[in-house]
Structures are given as structure tokens and as C-alpha cells.
Image (tube, rainbow over all chains, first blue to last red; front, side, top):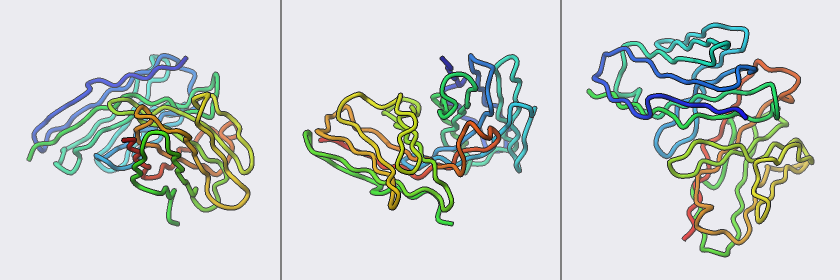
Length: 114
Length: 118
């Protein structure tokens, strides 16, 4: 059974800092990994999708990497801004079992202080 | 393209009442997934539906919960005789194709329905 862990659970940084969020998963046989952002009381916004054959994806100040063999992904946020404050969720779609499901981590709650 | 539309955004029900949550997928999407986010927990898969078919309901509680996706109209998640423990955010996602056929696409989620049982 796939399990996804995100560390740290919460992170507070001053504006302008670069930061890294971590995601690990137990079953490396995945189709893809997706990073989402969730604002309080809101829905999920997809940030980046990395296919299993890819090593990284970039969008603006965000860069996500994937090391499938070791079961790890990182989300790098450059030059953080207060508007980046949100909960960041990592989700994987696993080849085994039901490929229809996404397995989510519990998220990292990020606060960027002005 | 309005994206995945869920309504209502907030729903309050008394214990024992029924809750109906609606999800209209993105235009052109015929696959719908429901997830539940309990307070202080991550999102958990509930059910995957195609038009007029339930494909995978392995995450649905065995009693009181049901889902449908009719040929016309939105997908409905129905919770009968709600209890306090059903209070959660319920999210719907949609995709254009079956997940087994193509692995390299992501899911698009709606804004969710926040159910509060009092």
C-alpha cells in the first residue's frame, strides 16, 4: 500500500528566502507525481506534474524534482513571497493496485513572513 | 472552460439528514473522482466514476454513502443519515481519459464542498 510522507509539516520563513519542501513515497512504481497548493478553505491548485520518466519540472519560481528509485521528490521555491503562504500537497499515482487513485501526503503548511 | 464546478460550497446538515454534493466535470471530461479531506488529515480517495458506471468505490464507506454520474447532469455524492464524523471537505476531480490508458496527465480539482454536521 502506497504511503506518502511530507516533511516538514509546517515551515515559516522570512520573505525572499529560498526553500525546499520534501515528499517521500514507499512504492517507487509510480506513473507520476503531482504537487498541489491549497489555500485555507479553498480547493486544490495544481502546480507541477512530473511523469515517472522525468527528473524535474519547472514553472516560474517553482522547481520540482523526482528521484523515483529512492522514492523522493522535492519542491523548491525561489525568492519566497507572502503570497506563497499556503499548504503544499504532494500526490502520487501508483502503478500497482488501483491506478485510478491519487495518494496524498498530509501537506506542508508554509508561512512566508513579510 | 469553467473548470470543475462543485456546489454547494458550504453545506450544513443536522444529524440524520441527507447531504447531496454535486460535481460538474470540466467540459470534455467523462471521468470523475471524489476525495474526502477530514479535519487535520490528508485527502483520501473515495470513488471513481465514468458516465453511468461506478468503476472503483474501494474508498467509500460501506454504509450511508453512494455516488452516481448519470448520462446527463452532474455527478452526485449522497450521504444518508449524516453523523458528526461526516463533517469534512469533499473534493471532486475530473479527467478526460481513463487513468490506465495514459499516465502522464494530472487531475483538475474543484473548490470543494465543506460539509458541517450539527
